[in-house]
Length: 288
Image 1: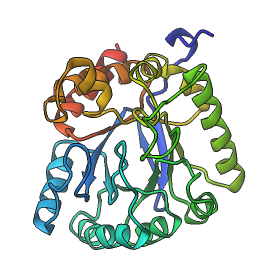
Image 2: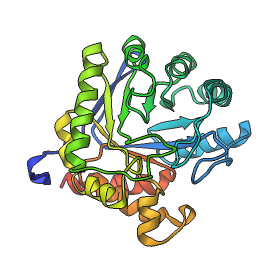
Image 3: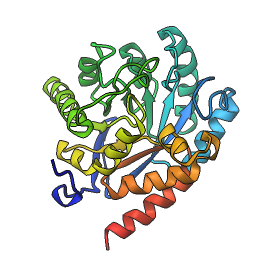
């Protein structure tokens, strides 16, 4: 099967209905990561006090983040999932303060739980980013239709505690395309209008799977919705160039550049400034 760029014309226009307003961009977007967790693979425990959380959000917004993705549980390989009460305890107080301090910021919540999603939207969040694509909590698809908020469908093979044990595909691009298409159909049938897809780099994929997906990313443009890419400082970068997560910024920027050239619409990143520079250069280059 030919998944080349020539067969998948790119669109840089993104439109999302957010809190009753239609937001339209004619460029790719940067989503900054804020982990309210003690055990995330890169910055776990870095943002525990209110001051450190607000300072980091302000920094990312000033560096050019279009969206802030807030997560209160770790989904790194081998992570143990926390219960709903603990996730809410970590998330809601900080979300309230962020929404108060930065009322114009577009906040995304990284959760797969419908109860957490409902509380988050009620306290200022604009969208939901679900690592399970609505498969961990069967109530979430219907809730997203009721909330009328954008929703990110990510693919994952397995669960965080076992997803990297032995990821196996016959044709990784074809299989993930089919899975995402089926999930999109379900959400659209329920009435969810603003959908974003994420192939799930590092979530039940080998290094070879990750790079094939990156190379063939343009194929997912046929799903007719924005493509989010989350590869920042992940193992697919670390292992290939033999660095730790702490030293994986340069490799991440290369990955982000390739993703944008291959059709990514949104980059989910730890390092907003570097990603924003890559986005500006690639967007300008593609418009020439």
